[in-house]
Length: 373
Ligand code: MRU
Image 1: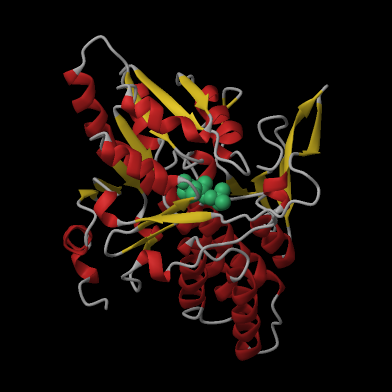
Image 2: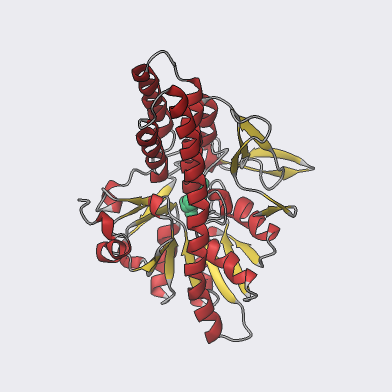
């Protein structure tokens, strides 16, 4: 997508040095646009853990490039030592963030691909090729999600000629959360590009404000009309006919259709159900967990530093400041995600099409997974 009119992805190999991976520092958006270099596995682990990069698809792509960096630095004296070092680095990356399943998926995909290499040089080449494949596939799958989701928006637009289609989204499942296009935003960009009048309600998404900072910024860069709202406003807007459709992303979706997404998503789904508003989750298949049946019981929910709740950052006189929000001695808790049960999800938009949020629905799009549990 474009930043100040110039096309960017969220991660790429440096054109100057193929041993360096470059990313956009999402901690300082929208105030500053900063590009950072990653050259070691520790750089990659920190970038994922401290959310310099974030969002399920991008976390997966970053882990893919992280395994390439691991291959560049692994001992070369024996094949076993090389692969052993890669496995250890893979474990280091996997524990950085627990909820997004794309992370483990990308590490495992890399380990399986690298092991097919004939010698160390070939294994390093394979790691780079696979990292690029993971990134390209993520972008392409999101593009296709846009094509499939567009039909939903077109349908609503036809039913209310001359009026905007109002779409509510939570957190940032935009291109910043992937390699390009985004999942929840891809249908929105596709509709906007087709000249359909769309307007997006952007949940601010406390505590880290990915909606207010990131989704609002990227929609603005693309010229999509949007309004940032407090997280608690959605129910009121839905009661008053101001929301036609909810589209969210997902960090992990069970093959039975339970959707883990940023904390607060479940409450939007409840409000949508009460107001008969369609609620869709948009996600590439790399986000589907083919092992887990019961999302509420089984999906690990990341708990982050309570300071993300008790403090808040923003821009003042051109500088980013963090200020204390709560009484110093009040405890704070920071649950990162919640799980929306399949029964509240109208449908899942994937790169292969739209399906019912159920085991039958998901497997109808991915019949090759039918042997999974
Ligand atoms: O904690 P984050 O920012 O990595 O969380 C991810 C998200 O932005 C959302 O949960 C998103 O809607 C799904 S990830 C594409």
